[in-house]
Image (cartoon, rainbow, N blue to C red):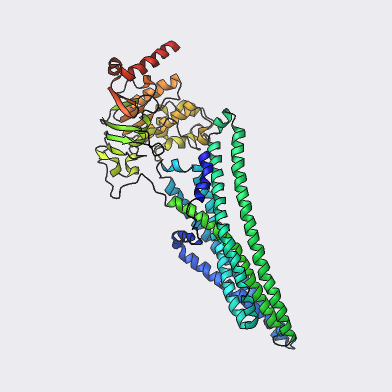
Length: 599
């Protein structure tokens, strides 16, 4: 949790040249929808043009208000009404097109980010919490959607109104326009100064929101442990502190934006009042008509409103720039485990021969400790090899290296004689089935959880796998049988039941290589006996690697590999290792003596 709280500070220490130009990173996602963008731009230009046309109609009406020709007056009123109708329709079309574009682009961004992070190696998640990743996919993309679906369109429309209004103001009265231009520098300066500060605060705000989301995700993901250790108050305090910090930063952002809004609106409308006062004197002197003055005032209001809107939107663009930068970081994140540019193919059929050739490895988070130290091992196709040893000996690391979650610092891991680094990860992983120590159960039905091992499997095949894993009986007793929802992370199941579903999933995968990492650790004696029999049957004809602390589960293995401090210290059958003495004999004596004493 401490790492999570420190994240915003790390973010702030990075290069501070965060400019609005980072939004250009969104262009690749917008490019496929150029036709939609073109249509939205046409509607936008039309509405901006109609907005600038209205003051001309108003001037005609005012200057001809006293004419005796009622038909001419009716014509001017009718023209103004038609312009208003076209403006309304154009605005509606613009809103529909731009909002659709924003939703489409953000949906593509979310998919692209998820597609990227779901394939990242475990080392990536040692540097960033999943809660923060989820915050970026949800909160940051929602902010971008708001900008693309609204703010950008409004900004472009107001920019056109500002430029067009300035030109028409100049044509209406050059003298009054020059007076208006004197105000522009006074408006732009606070936008630039406060806008830079607003950008930094907005980025900090988003960082703290992500950090608090990560903290909450961590606590809720382990809610039973939190409650078991009566840590609720401390968790509430930690989350409350981070949320309050996010609020304080947000308050600074709101305050800065409010200052910017007050300054800009006051300067703009003070200028309008001054210009209106001078224009009124010109009307009294006969230098311009009432309609001309009203036309100029309307243009001034449109221009002033567009400037005020642009100052508001600028802050939104600043926040979107920060959000875009955070998403781009995920899209451009470097992974230490990459597929080769010219991947080779495993020879068919896959036999399951495994080799560790002088493999040494240190976890990136623990660079001073060798998880594996010059490990060399060959496993023949169809052989069952068990790995035993004390905690931290490197047993689970063997399983992770075989799935290429990490690459060795030295040596090579091979499958059927081919180095895993020469293969596509998803290509060789299809031939591996895993039962982890902590079974992963998804918020779905029992049927879907087992079918996760092989999505195309039939219901009958799923049921057969469940029977082989001794899971059929308890699944059948669930309220809706195989269709029963098992809850998030399988909260409706016991530890042993979750483990049996995970084993059924591996059985269903029907892969030539089977990895069992403490697969029976959560089972009672009866279930363990049933599952062990299923595993023994499943192992026939398959290369099976078993990680176990309980030696009773590996006595029948073809070979037992004893590991200690990242090295292989002994190899042999159960009887050979017991007769040899050493670490395995001590572990066996300890466990089997305790087992007899317990009986």
